[in-house]
Every structure is written in structure tokens, then in C-alpha cells.
Amino acid sequence: MAHFPSSSNRSPWRAKVVTLFPAMFPGPLSASVVGGALGAGIWSLDAIDLRTFGLGRHRTVDDHPAGGGAGMVLRCDVIAAAVDAAAAEAADLPRIYVSPRGEPLTQRLASELAAGPGMIVLAGRFEGVDERVLEARGLREVSIGDYVLSGGELAAMVMIDACVRLLPGVIGSQDSLGEESFAAGLLEYPQYTRPREWEERAIPEVLLSGDHKRIAAWRRDKAELLTRQRRPDLMGRRSR
Ligand code: ADE
Image (cartoon, rainbow, N blue to C red; front, side):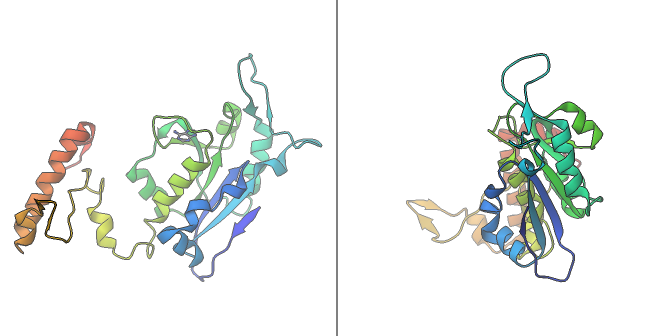
């Protein structure tokens, strides 16, 4: 078990990842604000090596699919042992299995998970896991998008990043969390900075006007226009 420790005395948000590739962690999660927050003890990470729960001399974790077919399936008994070990001193953590078959990861789900104590994430490989362990250990299936990755590790990292950046103290200005894409169910409005004119393209006049009401109205219009054009599905889902 690789443990990436915390130094603060406040109890950190906990991520425990069950994986055949613990060396992939923290990987990109050690960079930027999320990595800084790991070092500062705002969250903690355990990468739990599924292989250590494997069976026999070869530490076998998988077997052929019942009923035949291509590929290999991760064994329920091996996964259960690893998830139970992860949950041993963390019974309160929700359990997630990242899989293309899961419910979509949304900003709402990330906020819900960030508001809790952390999560145990099972990253699969091969053709998937024996269905029985999902039921028996209460694993919630979550997908990060309609495409198939070679394994769940990158999906686990995406989920952790989406949650950790919402924890208090991770991102300098909490205002920027309120204004970003999806916060109000809309995509974010376009941003500009200096120079005022670049390759004959000027910053929209209204943004230089100093008129905060007009600026807010312009941004709202742009956000709605972009959302209608690119993600009409989001317009229908909005609560206001
Ligand atoms: N594992 C492989 N593909 C995935 C996806 N799209 N989402 C979550 N986990 C995955």
C-alpha cells in the first residue's frame, strides 16, 4: 500500500484507490493545486495494490468469463478482500467502481462526494469485474464519459481531481468555483485579458466599460448562447 501522507491536523478528505497499478498514483494528482493540497494535508491518498490480495503463488486476480467470451474478469473474492481492507478503518467512505457502464460523473456528484469524508474507488482492468462483488460490497458505478479507457485508473484520477478542487482551501478564490462551467447549469462565458487588441481582434467593448451590470448581463447572454449551441441537453436540465 503506497500512502501519500498529510501534514495538517484537520482530518483530510480521503481517497483510497484499489488498483493493479498503484505506481500510477499520485501521478498527475501531485501537480498544481491538487498536488499542493495533498502536500498540505487537505486530502490524503492511498493506492492499494490489488495484486497483494491475489490468489496462490502467482497472486492471480482474474479468470475466464463464465459462459465464455474474450478477455478476463477480475475475481469477486479478490476484489472483496481488497475493498474490505480499504474499508477496514474507513467504513464511512462511499464506494465507487469506475466503469463506462456507470452513471455519468457530473458536477453535482463531484460536489456531493467532496462534501463527504472521501471515497474508495475501484479501478478495473480487463473485461471488468464479477458482478456479484458490486452488489455485495455496495459499489456505485460511475462513468467519466461515453468512451472506453484501457483501465479505470485515469477515470479514478479524474474523479478525485473533480472532488479535491472543491475542498475548502484548494482553490484560492471560492468565487471562481461559483462562476465556472456547470455551476449554474451553463457553460462558462468567454474570457479575455491583455493585450486589448491582438491580431486585429479587440476585447469586447462592454468588458472595458466598467459597468458591472452590463458586464454581468453580457456574460449571462454569452453563457446561454454557448450552452444552447454546444450543449442543448443542459438547457433542458436547468433548475432556473
Ligand atoms: N474505465 C474504462 N473506461 C471508463 C470510463 N469511460 N469511465 C469510467 N471508467 C472507465
